[in-house]
Image 1 (cartoon, rainbow, N blue to C red):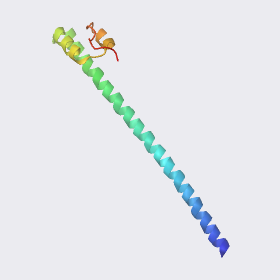
Image 2: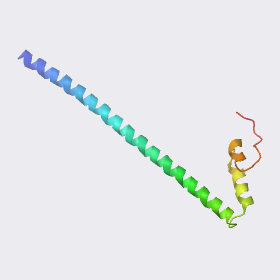
Image 3: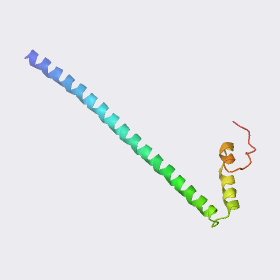
Image 4: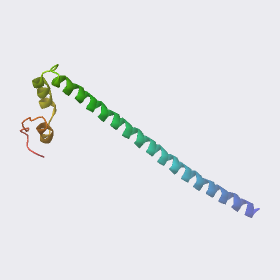
Length: 97
């Protein structure tokens, strides 16, 4: 009878360990899925931004949108000097941090 109790206790321990491993695996799979979804969302966001920029540049090149308006908009939005240089905008006056 004691042997049966010990066997049952060992079986419980084994099952608890198996459950612990299964939960860890599930968590790992869920984390991978979440990371993949985040990566896909970032890629889609980047693509949207590229397409919007391309559309604006095309309108400027065709003369449908004034270049000075685009540069004014970019000047208001861009804060990093290396980004501003891409559009031949003057560097910002704020000190580097």
